[in-house]
Image 1 (cartoon, rainbow, N blue to C red):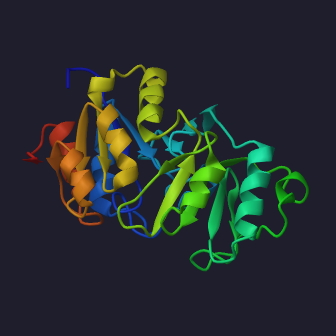
Image 2: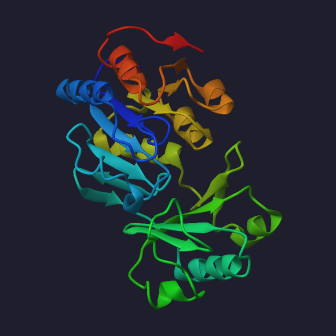
Image 3: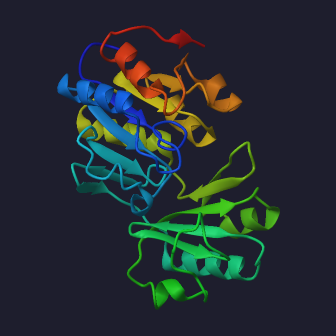
Length: 264
């Protein structure tokens, strides 16, 4: 990193919080100190803007949100850029999953989730019943990505074709499908350009495979202590655990010059 303004990009799940639980006070205090020192703090998440935890919306320690794996950038409540899946692609995907009751798919949109084949974490999300639902009952929805529960199967790869790019997870519990040319890394670079921050002055903090592109694009990559093996291997430093001040430890060391991190 060089001297000058820095931008911190934080994953949510497994990094800043778990399962929608608000960030710990130690992390919040450190992020406020970073912003008070003239630097930027943004969320960089696979979640669409409609699936952000309520505890983060309007938080005074955040400058904005990079959502949907680099598809949406929101700064100070203003949408800077946005992308969405086309209606023909939504129809194709809906028809595919409706024909396979054992495959659950989440259509992540600006206003929340739309689910095929069951609910998700007990949420009362709208259900996709017909392949043309995004042209009729949900015609106003703006879907930015898909999240599929389970490992990817060959038929899905064929269905996505060149219209969607999979982001796989080593656990096999779920994966994401995003617009080609997007991703957390490309989104980080676009956000830095918008903010006037040099990419080498960006700091990415994450814990899983969908953070790898963000790690590659950032000036410095930090893995949580609870990170997956792949995320740990791609990071420059390791910090503490999610919910136990790990984010605070990282930003205090790398932005405020307080303490050190373990080099990887």
